[in-house]
Amino acid sequence: MGHSPCYDGLVKSMKALSKFQSIYGVRTQVQQKMEQGTDYILKHRIYKHEHSEERLNDDMVKMFYPYPYRTNILEILGLLKQQNQLDDPRAKDAIGFIQSKRNRDYLFSAEKIFMQASWVPFDKIKKTGEWITNEVHLLEL
Image (cartoon, rainbow, N blue to C red; front, side, top):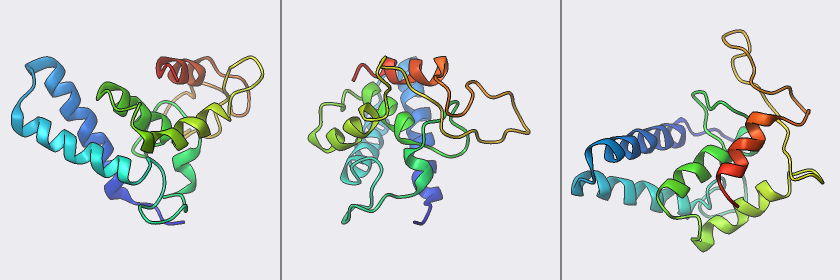
């Protein structure tokens, strides 16, 4: 499965534009870009290739926090929540995928840590994690 740095860049750019709008108000040109980006993400059902069931990459579905240079399903769902797009039918599969990862107590575990040499991990891998669980609960799925 290939990795698309462009997809990561799109998500990071949209997060920046969303923050810009929260500070400075909605601007027509910025809103148009946000809508184009949201449409692109939803066409991919968040984590898949547009015309197949194949995942964009394996890390896309890994549970990790914080979000480094790579994006994942949680970060993208958070962005869609900010844009009031979580109820779009194309997000349903990704939401179900996240819900399937919860344990019997509705808690979640980190599955990967990026850049371990650069920072302190927020949660231990494969252990119930407060940070990763909080990220999922903030989505209000």
